[in-house]
Amino acid sequence: MKALLYGNCQMSVLANWLKKHMDLVKPSHYSEDVKHDWEQNIFFPVSFKDKSEILSQAIHDCDLFLFHHTNNTEFIQSKTLYDACDKQKACITTFYFDAYYEAKNGLIKLEESVLLNIKKLKHRHLVHKSLYGEDCIDMSGWIEENWEKKFITSEVRHPTHFYYRELSKRISDRFFLSENIGLIPQDIKTHKDTNENFLDLRKLLPQIKK
Image 1: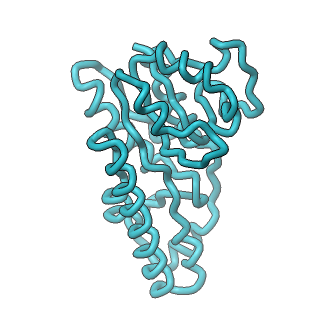
Image 2: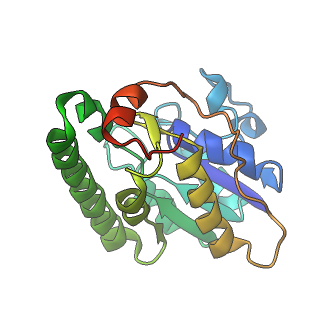
């Protein structure tokens, strides 16, 4: 099986997990150089915005297509690639969660921001579902249930291992039920991992795990 991943740096974490279990369709297979190290195993929309022929070939070459929703007209839109792909495929909601920044302003402000973030994530999933039907993996419910139990992100676009382990489980359950494919390890190195906001959170949520 060959997997193609189209999206931002969050996809690179999934790629580092998947490449231990299967082949990846990579930019280098088409003699394409990339700007960032984390792009080596994925197709970053910014880098392939004018390379539709390469992406069309990559879609043809893959057996599994995992992608972030992209509707920016400057890039090749994910719906175009989705419609062209007759293989296994799923849209993964792009992670964004900035509520932890409100911890320094107290619990009420934090909880208000959490509610707003969850509302936006759920709306984003509804948009995705209208485009991709059941070919979506939604993490908004898990985030809603776990944000105060686990330190799920150190920066608004870069979740921690807690998030990736659950996401890898959902991907595995969806596509690899009959295969022995492990989850993303707890010590996985994400694209950006810091202690930002954690001390403020710990004061409000002493039970939160890191």
